[in-house]
Structures are given as C-alpha cells and as structure tokens.
Image (cartoon, rainbow over all chains, first blue to last red; front, side):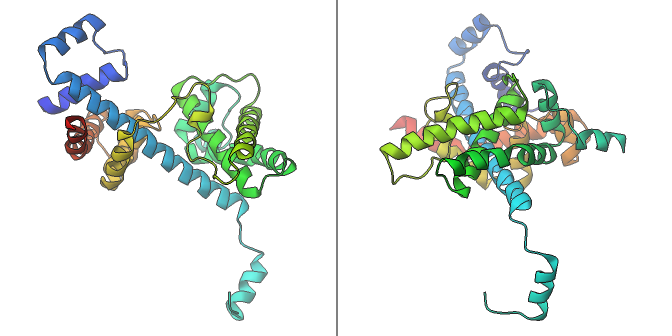
Length: 90
Length: 195
C-alpha cells in the first residue's frame, strides 16, 4: 500500500485495538516523535464515529423496510385487480 | 442448497450463533427476529397506551441494540433472542413513557444509545459533520466502509460481495475509501480545532 494508506492502517490498528496494535510504550514514542500523529488519530476517530452513525441510519432503513414487508402488505389480490380494472380517486 | 437451508433457519439461541447468522445473512436473520418478537412488543406497547408507530420505534431501537451488541461480541443472552428483544423494548418503552410524562410534546429521540447504560453519554458534534460526508461518498465506497466499520463483516465477505479478487484488494480499497472520507472531512475538522 501507499505510505498514506499504511499510516491509516497503523492508526486503525491502534484505535480499534486489533491484535497487531503496537504496545502502548511504542505508540507513545511514536506520538512523541511524530508531531502530526495525535491529530491524525483524532481525525480518524471522528471518521469512525461518523461511520457508526451512518451505519446505524442504514440499519434503521433496513428495519423499516422489513416492517413494511411484513406488516404493510397491500390488500387482497382481488382488490388490487379490481382497482386496476376500475380505478377510482385516492 | 443445504447451506441455504441452514441460513434460512439460523440457530439464534447463543450469542455466537446469532452473530454468525447476522453476519452471514443480515436481512433474513433480522426478518426472522422481527416476525418472532414484534407481535409481543406491539401488544405490550398498545396495552400501555402507545400507538402502532411507538411499538415500531421501540422495537427497531431494540433491534439496533441487539445487532450492535451481537456483532461486537458483547451480547449476553440468558434466554432467547426474542425474549431479549421484548425485554429491551419494555425497558425502552418505560423510559419513553417517563420521558413523555416530563416532556409531553417532544418526539422519541432517533438514537437509542443514551437510553442504555453501556452506551456513550453523547455523540461528539463533529461526527454529525462526518455523517454528511459519508453520505456524499460514492455508493461502493460507502457500502464497503459501512460493511466493515459498522456491520462488522469480515473482509473475505466484503471482497466477495463487492467483486474484489482478494482480501488484500478489499483491504486496499477500504483504506482508499477511508482516505477519501478523511480528505473531505479534514478541512472542516482542522477549521473547527483552529477556532
């Protein structure tokens, strides 16, 4: 990967505490020697918050669709056929 | 065919099985939970003076809670998932009734998080700005990022679903999309911190 993507990966490992995350001491050292690392990590944390919100919104849309499929079914087929043959104002 | 039958009737009795079923086929598993548990929640809410819409809102909040806990591996079940959903819905509805007694004219909040003990107290304001930029991403980027970071799908599944030849390609694409989002957000974020 490009160095920029590797950096995102490194920060992600730390923020999400994956098994590949650096030991705390080593991460602190990196923060000391890399003046932009803390700000980049803060920003990346914000991205994860936003993605969480967006994901929750999508899940809610999916649940509304499930509800509609299960409980907002159209009326009987004969009624739909009748409406097609003999439309009337809604 | 056997695999399809297995996912059509997911074993949702244990948190691990439920997690697996949600990751393998979210729509089908959620539909099954919905069909099993919603009627009881609807009866409960209607009996206590709520509307059909109230029942739908609290039940969907409960499902969001269940989903997030299940995929995060923090769900603890002492009974079936349906019983858990009814219990969480009851808790949310009681909370809502108390809230309405205090503030009768305000609608149910969109976010069930603050109603739950283990949820963060408040969402940081900057995440709302990020949310706007997530919506502006292309469909594929948004889908990949949400699949990984919210729905917690494994990269093997994401690679297969989005036509990447390998997990490596999916990983690179995920970081490219994250980079795209970061570039969009960075200007706003930097500006807020500079003020």
